[in-house]
Length: 230
Image (cartoon, rainbow, N blue to C red; front, top):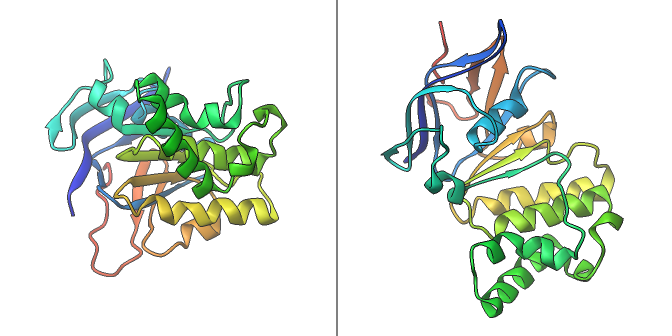
């Protein structure tokens, strides 16, 4: 399988505290990963670093086969990586405007933008909320809108921070049902979570952040373990 992102070493610390020191680290194209670990171990921080929202010490970084530096964050990665926060921020416009915001910033023609947004809202099951005020949405509705907003950008790497956190019942099931579909277009998905149903999705690779190291829990026999810092 083709490697999408490779980092020879990824180091993060706050003052004298080393949060993690990972070597090496890689993500395959078109594969789903679940990132687990106790609260405070650095899961969200790791996602934010990969998304260019936080700085860290890195060396030997390659993205889509090309060597890059994460500081300053390269334009190629900014266009190809989307981060969805645990509590998605919504603009005070409408659901449709929120879903299409990234495309508008990219200069997508209005007619094409409208078609893509319509398809994404139908995919996420939020078409009926098109003109709604995002402030009035439930937690599950906001998550589905956020996933639609991410999907329209066709990211190579999608980073989801606790996508089912604080969701119960039907809302959680609706979000769970969308995750496998994100892989159909070849997107690599990394989900930081504690959700056993996400961890147990077919084909998902579990990676655990513990004591500053990243461990791979094989879901398929024969897969090599992820290298650890020694």
